[in-house]
Image 1: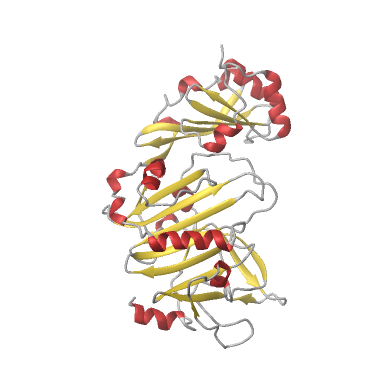
Image 2: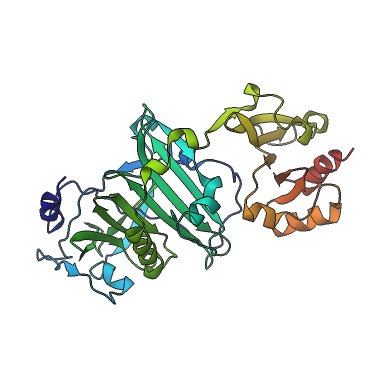
Length: 385
């Protein structure tokens, strides 16, 4: 769409707007991460595809349109969201068939964080220990889009997800939770937006404080959507906008052959994966329900197993055993020690405080989610024999 056409669409346009407002549900302390190695691409395969091309600017309860704001030096982050207000949130999960996902392949560049920072491709964000960088490609291997997600976990106050999605052209949003806003009578409200013109480019803001929020724009260098979680303030999103405004991404920097390919396969496809790290579940009366292995460029880097026992309810999981050869910041932080030094009391104490216990075994981090602490300790102790 040419810029002249786009200006007409954005100003009081009623075109291909999604009737859903997307937000990530969160309440209370965040749950423990049960599968830290699962790829974002796998999550996206169970997602809802949403059109994001145009926006309704009609005010609540009227037909007049808010003015397009004019950016100037000293423009405050909250001004980007000046006209964004709404009602009460309602919603839930939805999904579509994976065939609706617009790209065919994904490659990870997460391991290149230090290099990307040194090259000035992305900003340094020391307060966000986790970075996911995934590039998506068409069936012929040509570039489709890229996304960067900086994350921080912990308590609700600590939580943060800052995301940048970019491509040569508009990238439809993939989400697994759909939320709409309703008025006092339960009527669905169109998402409120604010449009700001900056250097001849229109920046469209959705969301508001204590909600997911985004800033979307398109320049000659590409299309960008900058997103923050419910817990991220306007300033955090605006700072990312300013960075990529001044540092547009060279998409040619991310050819498909340079990224890491991840696959998620049944253990039966690679039965020897992590065999030296696993206890003899059968000897302790456990039956395997399901076990999968994550492959990185064809090599096993993680395992996730689900087990039950005859004493348990039929088909009910009694043991969830996870191994990752690529532990992240939070995996290492939660590990209470090495397998060799681990004590029964440490395991019991960890499980008294939470639903899992994590420890280091060789070059891997093991995270165990048991129904009974005694069963967990028996299996862990057997690994030292």
